[in-house]
Length: 335
Image (cartoon, one colour):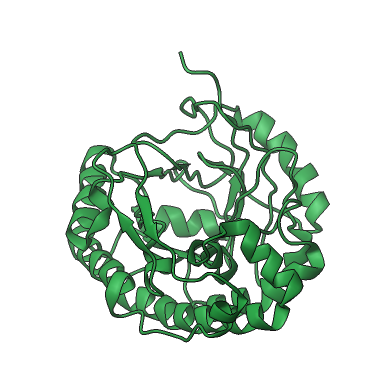
């Protein structure tokens, strides 16, 4: 099978010749330009020959569109330093307006995507990162996540307006990503959990904006939802049950430990992410154990069928509308 045949067969739930595999990771030095991101991605392609690619865009690129500034890192495993956050209060949130994602930091990401697609050709599927509007918002505020949640609760109309501006921008960006060569999105959120938004708040501040962005790529064959959460803090997948995701698979996560490489995967697709540093791996877990865990996970979500896929980073991922689930991460002590 070709890479594309293997991945798309896995997403359909059809037999595959082997498990499609991909990992991804930050290199905080190379991700600060289109040329650097493309070159690092292609270096990893040459080294590992992944079945599909998830190039690691810099996390701050979305907030940069509304004025965030940062000092790049000079160490591949050390994050950037924020030097300016553009918003200080709810009035600033309410004044946010849509911007053109084909320019600035997001335009740079599109240039990197187009170069990667030209280099790898049509056979390798590529998914491209977009953060949910409610995940972008904390990076715009001086008080970060806590201030974003406080504004949502105290001045919800201001938050509605700000999120709508971000969603409109990301709607256009999502379409541009597909036009530039992406097969779909790696759509990430990190506030749909017990220490973030409540399920009711998710329905107001997450769902409408998520649906707008995801509608832009509804015909793309490979969309993946990544819901980040930490152990004991609960991920609210139930609040997303009416969203257009085919499968759900909650993932436990342990903090403060390194991962060891996966030896055996579940049924279909493995994916992986290392949030910090220059390595990526996933936990070791036998296919039989994954198969045993899967019915319990799917029973909880009310959906039948599924695939166990894993990687670094906490959370849960599901395909939208096709099948993939980013399954259980465990960090094990360094040896």
